[in-house]
Amino acid sequence: MRGVMEHIQKRILFSREEIDGRVRELAHEISRDYRDKDVILVCVLKGAFIFLADLARYLTIPHTVDFVRLASYGAGTESSGVITITKGLDHPVEGMHVIIVEDILDTGTTAAYLVELLQKMNPRSVKLCCLIDKKARRKMHCEPAYTGFVVGDGFLVGYGLDFNEQFRCLPDIYVIEERMP
Ligand code: PRP
Image: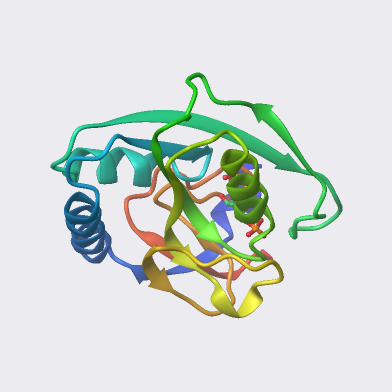
């Protein structure tokens, strides 16, 4: 694994400063929109864990956090559309304003599934906040209320995003340009 990773060529797409600035703006918007409301941030593991940590710390409103993990099975890098929950919520969201925190919105399969699932739990509202939106690849209807960056195609790593579980903790976001040695 180490040998393969060393040969991956990647270039910075969003610097840590750009990301930080955008996350602060999103936190500002959310803090304004949800003043005096009971908010729970639902982080979709694993990719969103760093985004969640930064976003939550920039919010100026009281809120709680919870975590879910979903798996979609199928060949290749794209969602198969068949999703299972491998870690559910720890706390009920009934009567709460839910904000789903995602790192990437791609086909929209994962987020659309989660929105529908959470809506059945009688929350006051369910909205989606994603750091990166690959809008052109959308297959399921899914419109985020808060979006960090809209990007085209390309495999991204860093700031929570992985390639074979590597690179999640890089502080900047990179696009992989070359995977072969
Ligand atoms: C990524 C991302 C979203 C999903 C988006 O998760 O975090 O949850 O894919 O794809 P979709 O819009 O096509 O459903 P991934 O399966 O890579 O897991 P990870 O977050 O643990 O890296």
